[in-house]
Image (cartoon, rainbow, N blue to C red; front, side, top):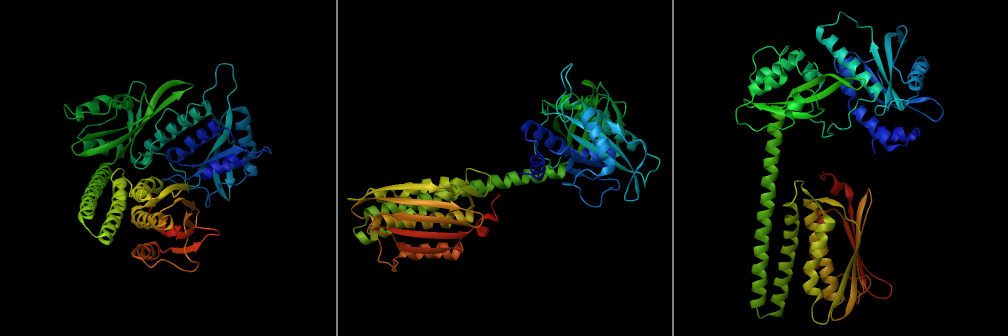
Length: 497
């Protein structure tokens, strides 16, 4: 659960739709702060009619007003009346005169956060207040870019007060690589014509092959002329370029990739233009493609390793069937089973991108490997599993799968040899450790004694040597044996994605 959600619920706001709206708005806090060149603070009401800060974003290109983060603090007395007025009236409230904060002159704007545009005749549902704190100590003659950025910020604040922003129809994909205001900004009018383009935005389009001025041009025509003929492109691109949809799209040309994000601007529901953010993500896309290629290569390697191991297991099975020595046949069968257990882990890794596995799925497949043993002469064994192992990195999944295969096989072969019984495998996972118990209802071991065979040596080596865990054998009261494995989770979780 995120910090914002914790704070919101702590103030008594429990409506999931309201919380989702606040999350979406907080996600664009950096955009608002950069456009406004001011600190942005989100406040939600408390049960005692006060307000608590649940989010705070500092501007990227201007001096911050707050040296320390104020998230979790109650609204200060000098802002309380203004914030409360915006919340109760549903209107934007500006400070009448410069406000002083720790000897710094500031200007404060309180914007009501309205969830969804109200229907005609209905009162807007205000769920919080956004405050804009502008540091006036560094005030200077604003540039044309700063004026345009502030105008865009004012438009977005007006949309927030009307319930038009954020737009829930916008995609919620990962923000890594998402364009920011400083990366490049283009202002479009209602017809999709560029009325302003920041220097960074113009440079980005120059790298695509456009060598003229963007202002006064149709963004759709500019991109159409840039794109190579017969090149397939995202069908949503025209909607993004005209400012009609709050989506993201990429433009590829001349080996350069520009990511675009469009934010339609509205005035009380009427579309008045759009803001298009653009960012050169060429290097990032190359890195992503390299990662995809590496992932595919790794998956193919796991697939081939699995195939080779299955071939080895088949050869061992054939050799076991041809041998005339019972001892040699048992040794070959056990070796075949161990190789097959490793193949199961590689098969699972070959099916996904992450180098981690759902060990519950792996173990269910490993249990099938002991089915042949359970069906041995005079032996009727039933296996049961309880609890969850969870996700483990591959370097730990392989030794654990092998160790459990040995323990379950030993429980069936030796504990339940020639009789009917149960084998129960239980897993209990906490923040500190993974505990696994293997119990059988067989003849049991003499208390204090542990098997001296190859299987026991393998289990000790895997659990203690490779997983830094501990293992304990003891006889249950009445009948049967219980083996307990404890593995510190700090070794298991450090590589899990």
